[in-house]
Image 1 (cartoon, one colour):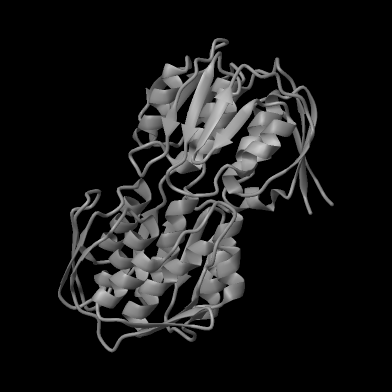
Image 2: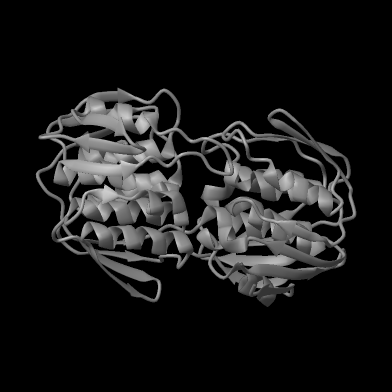
Length: 420
């Protein structure tokens, strides 16, 4: 097991420039979408993170030919040789469920393991299944697997009971090769959904309403080749913005899309940070010595992202006052708080709320990362905790952050990865 060791300090000031990688949550559905064509798809600005390698392993099992060149991937699934996504791979990465829609639409059959729960709470896939059934799929749940088949899918009008990013993506992909028109209502508005639609349109899909709650898809007979750039990772960008605010730093973030971060930027400015738009793809953050408390409530985009909740909680431990963090998306996303308490934070959890009392001087300790974003939050806490902090089980971190310790080191952090 690898560990991260940090020598932190209350006086740390991170300074410098960092390039933000492509978005993990955008590249995974984009890779799944390549199943829809037998021609080559070229994806650019791909983050080389663990989840990408996991889904590429799955793609190869399905019959895809995948080639990586730096941060570009070339994928061609000329023939589908398997219709099964095994539990071993789905367990490693829940986003494997995104192959369900494309496999069903092109191949007429898909067998995908049920993801089950995870460290941040249950994420049922009922909305995926109900939507595909309305498109004409026959679906059975047997022995822990989704067994789906369809001689020919047909268009339908589908309204999601609640916002679902993965469900929206799965249904858009399936509908792209479905006869007739499909109307999806109450779609998720996340930039990653928009990025997927833009790729599908380049491949020949007919999609109207991109970026809106109602999306219309007119199915086509086949899709073709395309070259497509993955959007910047707004969660990685947000993590570095908080690092700047937390350390009273001066950090410039390049290769980003600032409007994807509007809600977080607004909260950071209220908290006292100064944020400047240097150009359309570059932001500069200057942290303040006086961090003001802020209440946040997570909600679907464009609301405050659940994937930034843990990191913002760390910032509020250094605010001058009390903040209330309300988590509405996942039912078990406060696992990082017990570890923050070990570092000296003053936080109480009551149901879906965490009451954070600042300003708490943190001190180094040995702690455990329980999930991807918790890992990032504990690194942030370790940076400002006096002394040595060791974070165990950091394999979660590598699922979504590309070389985060190297980027932090370039900004002045004392951080290293340890083996065993």
